[in-house]
Amino acid sequence: MIKFYLPVGTVTGTAESVAHALAEEIRARGHQAEVDADYEPGNLARQEPDILLPCCSNTGQGDIPDNLVPFYYELRNAPPRIAGLRYAIVNLGDSAYEHFGAAGRSLDQALADIGAVRQGEILTLDALETVDHEDDARRWFKTWYERYIDRKKIGLFYGSSTCYTEMAAEKIAAGMRGTSVELHNIADTDLKRCLDYSFLIMGIPTWDYGELQEDWENLWPQFDELDLSEHRVALFGLGDQIGYPQWFQDALGYLHERLRERGATLVGYWPVEGYQFEASQGLSTDKSQFVGLALDEENQAELSEERIRRWCEQVQREFGL
Image 1 (cartoon, one colour):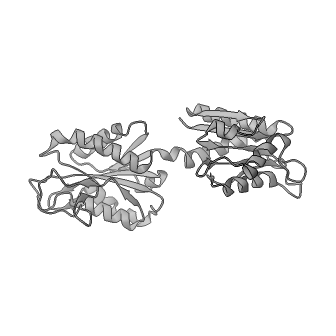
Image 2 (cartoon, rainbow, N blue to C red):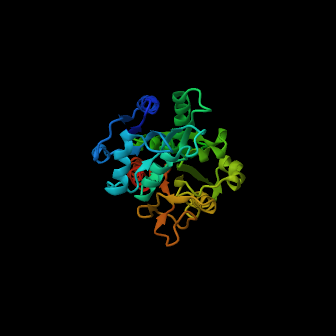
Image 3 (cartoon, rainbow, N blue to C red):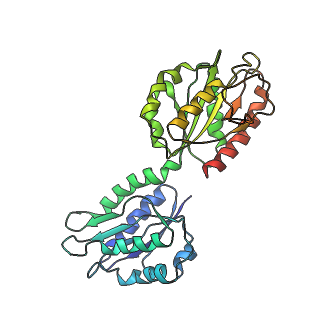
């Protein structure tokens, strides 16, 4: 559950109505929302929110309404320690006035100056264009939430010909406790769907003498169209260390290199201890780790459950979830 705090600056009550509409959207998604139209110094620190969402109208020459002035003064003169706090701003104004939207911009600057991090652009609702401020705010929130909050979901993409990789994917999804994981079999998924997620897990088996699984091979050229520079990716692979000891987890290495070329941040490396193989393209530079979780359902199936459990905990830490 994410805690949202919505301090309100209002003269006519419109900004407060917008804040309550947003609070309804937040609670409908299973999170906590606190609307505060009577700010007192220290309220922000006492609330300890995960996300700050001020809703502020403009008065006079782009001034902050009186009931939110204590909030602004506190940010400027006695700021709480909120470096890294995520925030968004809803700014209500009238473009007929010379200093249209100045109040929201002032709040934005004050928050940025003390290290808070804005998520997305300021939502500016213009009285000359907006018919229903609440409806417009709700529509904005849906898009904003999907982009900046719901992207905490993990997208798990896998290719599977014999069901073993699919079964491993399902176990990994279940092992990501407290985190939503959406499964995608790449046999019927466009690889561009990866861009819908900030956090990715990809699973690939190695076939025969170090070959790619057929569905991954078919989609391989699509990587050229992806910019993954803002994505964290963890990998898992399936292989046979006894039957193919010179090619164990080779496809895992090929996928790792392809993702590295596209700018992804790779996490989820796994120690080589406990395996018996002769060579692998799926190793880190110093050869002390696989570049992802290495599973062998042919020879070490009894170890898979514990390996998956430990790796899921590791990946969640490295994802920061």
